[in-house]
Image (cartoon, rainbow, N blue to C red; front, side):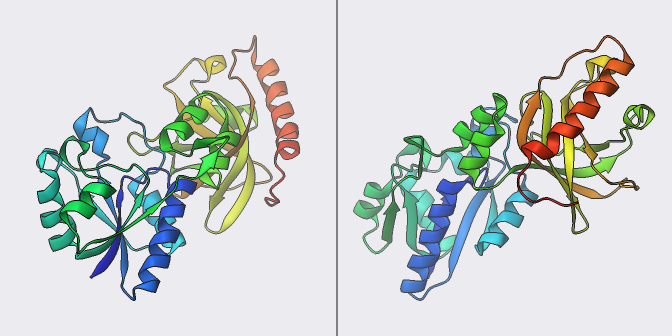
Length: 294
């Protein structure tokens, strides 16, 4: 007998955290183990098309966050067969038989199964032996926190709003790879990240934030875009770590976005670009009040 929650949980935001807290609480009351079941790939990548929506959390990031929350996680492979499974078969064969569900924690109006016919009322009607616990949505500015609202905030260059709904800074993780060395030539070396597929990058521009690796955390100026002053390239993310001089190639770097400083623009010459980068670096600590070292 297991207490479960079920969903994509993209972002592991404050609404999801409320589900996880309720799951732990109800499982403890009923003296049973608890489990979060998430899907891989994202259900809409199968139902609609891969990459839509872009992801707030990769599978690795999701695992790390769930471990931090104290929630055992299983990534269930999602495919068209599972999508086509009738609601009652989905519950019987998947939730109850496969995962031993006895108690199910759901968000208000949460739906699942073919045609979205699965909800709390349907579960109560068809599966009276299954305990159902519903929770109200978490609100931000009067509306429910959701992954789609967070994506919209990031795409509009508003990491502060996204972070408020996430309950943490939005982050992008990746292995540091070799770029063209243009940042170093300018005197401001940057770490270029190899991004996981379908990871959401916020609106192009320059951001203040932080970069972490090997237990170290440094303030950082982050550029997202195509670097129009240096010849234009595909959109990517690069971070200049303040007060750091070392080799990061091959290391896993986690970049947090705290505030947006400005748009990405094309400068008349390299000297104008360098002067603006100096201003960005000076501006970064003013916008970053989170006590990040150094």
